[in-house]
Image (tube, rainbow, N blue to C red):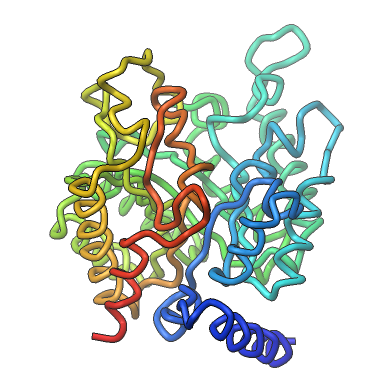
Length: 370
């Protein structure tokens, strides 16, 4: 299967290069370095948006679902699972010979309230919540056993100060909810890679807490294949030294590093908290949406230089990094158009709203040839 996929990819790449004037594909440029992917929405993997579906096929060799495998979508009610879109996502990845990621199994957000409650709306017991977790993981992971190759098992369990987040999972089950989640995932698919995924790990306190967590899980016998550094960055944060130190710190634990949700926010942030917390929500204001009519050349240049610096660091750590995944395909479908302020015009990716490569694309692909 791998040989067939490789042959198809090479043939398609040759034909495409001829048609597009030898425009490179990210998956080819970084082939011997790490996988390069994107997070997809249904219009892309169902191919109703043929332009973006074609862009994904040409450019990427790994995919992550934005939402269709999150609990609220795939398991909205007790005893009810809806795999219609998730099946289409997996089929798209298989048809195009991609490394398929499952995102995400245990998270405090986008999980229905009923999961944590009894019939009277009061907090569920530890036993009930553990049973629900096990049923969910065995059903979802089991359905795609051998097809989805890696799972974000636990998402964002560490708070900014490095302690465990006071989520319903922690409050009801206790600290061992993490151990149980990984045990259930391994039970459902012993061959799948299991990941921990979080944002702001470049900050010292949170990184320290995540390192402690990974060490504890390893001591308990959990095989963590990689830690996902989300990579929701801006033009100034994180510094090169922080990113370098973060990748190195996790690599020293014997795990790979995945850059899982990469984007670069060029818009002003409305508050002090710049962490990628989906619960943040601010009122719209003209000063927070300065580029409604297009990105000025000066800002485009800043974005380009920043992407080049980030990928230079990724390449320095190519032996520790398995995958770099952009959170979105084009600027037009980035979550940053609606977070943390709804209705803004954002420019965080390397493909513009028309699906054309931006100067940042040329900058990062040029790094490999230097």
